[in-house]
Length: 586
Image 1 (cartoon, helix red, strand yellow):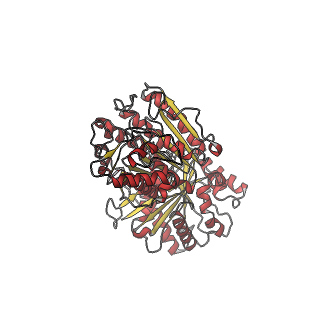
Image 2 (image 1 turned 90 degrees about the vertical axis):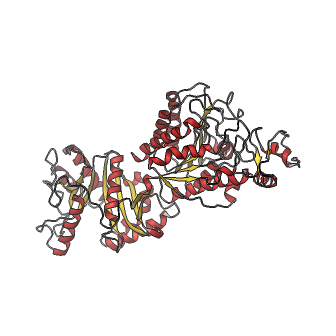
Image 3 (image 1 turned 30 degrees about the vertical axis):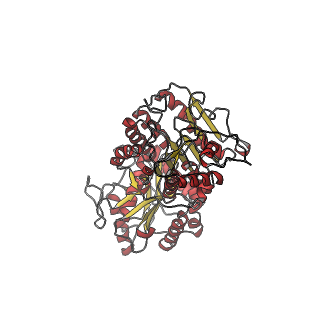
């Protein structure tokens, strides 16, 4: 089995290794490629404006993360076409289905982007153009391979004209129309050809040569060669070596990390809605979708928690939980004035020193369950770094009400904030909180930072928990001024009204252009949720998910609230269906 993943850029751990190996393959298998063209690959991934193409690198990896092949795909959003720059298997990996899987992934991406087609160059199979028998055999094999997918050379043009009279084997321009019957219009192809020659071969093709080649496209529609190797209508190839289902398109799957110890934190008091059944009801609905790849939880050190939470809070939760007997809970009931010099000495009384409400109990397993939730979020972060475009940390207890120095709202540690802090080491991060209640935790933790944008849509604090934060005028402080955005919303709200505000929030996130997006997913905006007052339906959650997915940032979703068990799983299912459609086109 091998996996195909999208390599982000050299700033991501693990991706720099893959990029270096791709460069090694380019040097080995394309010796005529200029060294500077190999060296610029990391910059191409980071700077689409400079190169006038959005560069997408797909890597096929086997056991031990060994690189088995790659495809370098150039996307021209302005002209809506894709250009396959390079596709190659590593040494000793040919004939194992790697090329077919990679090209199928390129086609999927092009279809999701709704491109006119995929274009690329292929050396000719005409003996009059290529006289070396061995090279001619290779060319025929390569064109046969692509023809199985419906990709064939454009004919009747001067594209094959050598730049220099002494050049041999000038390439065809091959077009893959992605199974569409729509003809290629001359005006569109001329723009595509000019873009290829001027952008890919900048500095190599004289303007007169470019004009001559572009003008040679006279047919309208443009003619494509009839099949030579594959009977018309035959399906694309299936690898004889890899069985069906052996290729994991990792960048089109959502990594799923479940808190496998969430149920050790079970408060049995009547009315305590943050119950283990929440996780079971969500899993029951989302797993049959076929969107998720389950990943085991990894252990991480407490330094990740201490990066966003005060040590005194962390130590208190650890000690207080350890001292309680099984089944015993401590609820905050005394809230002393925050005297940093003289906090209460008794642990039960000190609960109110660290907590913001009276309904978030500490029990023997509160610390352990919350720590495991953080481990889940960090495992999901690791999945993004390893090539997943989306990851879902399905956790309880939730975390978005936990601030740097206090806990509350069923929350002990802010898993989403810990994840955002970890991701911020590799670029800017946006945290979007779509829980019914204000994301006060992330606001407090990141309020002074311009590299983490915090955005929250929530019920107005005049009627919704936590009541003391979430006002529109709270915009961040110091260097972080302008990097916190609150959308306090009215008590009665339907899905359409919600989406109007969500669209505004997403525009601000898009303008911020984060490296990654963290979504604090609350399902409590749902109709009849016991903690909310809005009326969003399953279809609303699907539309919201699609809007978020269409941003196409690497996205980590962390589960927060949502307490109406009858609709909880269905709403989660619809949200992720929408997210996948927006992000992957499926």
